[in-house]
Amino acid sequence: MWQAFRDEHVDQGFEVVTVGMDTLGAEACRPFIEAAPLSHPSLIDQHHRMAELFGVVNIPNGIWIDEQGMIVRPAETAPAPPSLAPERTSRLRGEGMPERAVAMGAEAAKIQYDRDSYEAALRDWIAKGADSDFALSPDQVIERSRPRSIDTSLGQAHFELATQLELDGNHGAAVRHFTRAHELVPDNFAYRRQAWSLEPGPEGPLRRFWQGPMEGAEADWPYDGDWLVETQAMGAENYYEPFVP
Amino acid sequence: MLTTSATVDRATFEARTGWQLKPEGACKGEICVPLGDAGPDSDTVDLAAIADRLGMGLVHDDQVGMWALGPETLGGRALATAEAPNLTLPDLDGNEFELASLRGNKVLLVAWSPY
Image (cartoon, rainbow over all chains, first blue to last red; front, top):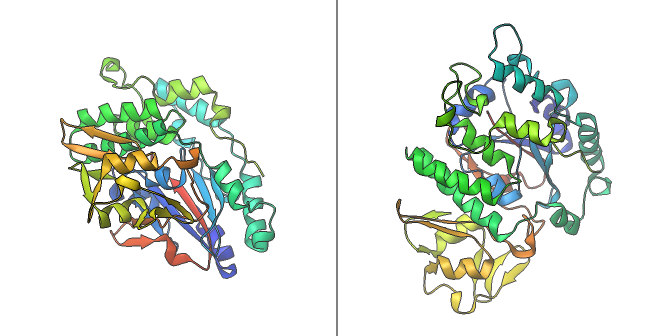
């Protein structure tokens, strides 16, 4: 998604690193990564280390790191540039779509991305470095990073345990620890989407985006919330926090 | 960090948490936290003791025989320092990549997911 932007700026000492956060790992990420040739590093993060190390709680999120290895903007919503934006909702349109898919498409269409502001800020930083108004001081970076209490840390421990148990084939125990992680870190929407995406969905491209009960099998859904219910409750227009210069 | 015991060897702890255990305490970036009695006894780190000092959540599931240690909560923020941690993750082919290898460049690190 960032390849063209990266190519445009690589001569200015700029690089992009993408990190696919998915318990199911490389094979789940591969079709998306290999959809177009990439020349920047593209990594796989099965246990959401990005949450632990940088405070990533939703995707897409971006972090800016300068030439000295200092973070100059902590994790925030990082929509792909306008010209490169994929048509997210197209797969949820069309005749004969299940009711849930139509409802999800309607919510997804309401999600707001401040693509232009983010891209303009990024270009400004690439050009001006530390003189860019968008490059924050170390104190601002720490202050703007996500709040982290002992509950957050405990929740992250439960999440890592859950992802390992899922990989070990112990889905029941994984659900138990995912549930604790969701309770302890309620602001981490990626933790919820990850767990929901590991539950059954309809065969085909919607499977991992279903993230909720299958029709007729509502009693089998192991979580309190699901993508549609929670997105409707928060208001899809609040799905991402607006860009703060 | 996941373990199958209540203690972990020092090298693993340092590599996995980014905290270096020094005579003055546990250090990361410009921050050092005195460890007192929680300091590593030879090359072994007691998870409960160090979790207490660094404000880390520690989960033990005795049904599956595993411990999980969450990150530090010093300062109440996800970042205790603006110095970027050395993220090391595999690429699609399993080759480990170190974020620090891009030192000297401006880097946009983007998290995404296929679901």
